[in-house]
Amino acid sequence: AVNEMNFGIPDMQGNQPMNEMIDKGENLDHCLMSRIDVDSLCSTLSESHACGDSIDAGKYICNYTYYCSLRELADIENADVIFIHVPTFSVVSKKKQMACILDFI
Image (cartoon, rainbow, N blue to C red):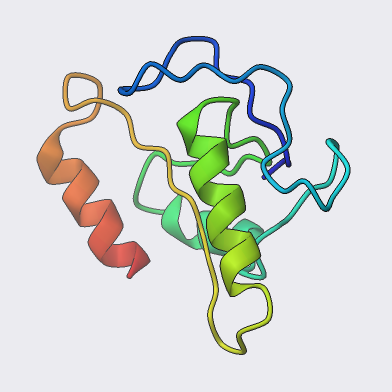
């Protein structure tokens, strides 16, 4: 996750920050990453599910949520954060998504 709020469209409250820092105490390009071994996790899940890994949470609310979650739990031992983008049910059925999430857990 990147320390940047750069919303291409307004959120539900009409806010549309552009090129603003989430954490004013860090540089705009400051990144936080999950401690979870995402490569290994995706490798295991991809044996039975269509999935992949990414280092980009996007620029909208997804990145904001992920960055804030990673920052909040950074100093807590055994508290890990992962962000999972899921497609709409018209792309991947609810049944397939639920199976993948259950295998993930």
